Length: 242
Image (cartoon, rainbow, N blue to C red; front, side, top):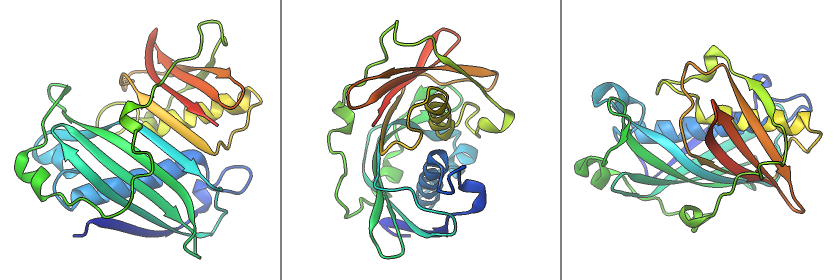
C-alpha cells in the first residue's frame, strides 16, 4: 500500500473513438478505476459498499487534457489523496505518456455517503487517519470554491441522450463517467468540438437507475461552452468545456 497508486496500461481499441484516440469518457474511466483501486487498499473503496454499505460519490472534478493519446499508446495513471475531511475526500489524477510527459491533470472532490439512507456520512475516524496523503501538488487548489452556472434558460432546446442498462453502476445510479459521455454526445450533435481540452463538472443530483434518457443543454460562449444535464425536470449536473 502506497501514498500514490500507479496504474500502467495501454490505450485499448475498445476505448478509442472514431478519430483513433482515447475517448474522453474512457479517460474518465481510467481515473475512476485508479481511484477505486487505491481506496480499496485502505478499505474505503468499492469493498466498503459490501462491508459497511458506504461509498464515495464524485461531487466535482476539473480535468485538463494536453492531448488525446492514440490507440496502443502506453500510459501511466497516477492518483493520490490530498486529504479526507469529515465526509469529503480530495483526490488528484495525472496521466503520463511513455516519455513521462503529463497529458492529463485533474483535481476532484468526493463525498462519502450511506447507501442505505442516501445521506452524507462521516468517514470512520480510524480509516480516515490511516489513509495517506500523497506528496504531489494540487492541480486546482480552489476546486471547492469554483462557481458553476447552468446555461441560460433560452440557450438551447437541449439534446436528448438515451441511457442504457450498462450505464448504471454498483451505487444504483448513473455512473459519473456516463455524464461525460452525454456531454460529448451533445457537443458532437451541436457541431461543437467533441474533444475539449478542459472539462469541469459538478454533480448536483443523482440520476436513478430507472431513467431512460437525459437532456443536455449547451450554451456556447466566447472561450468556453457551459452545459447542464437534466432529468425529469431536475438539474442533475452543470459544467463547462473549453
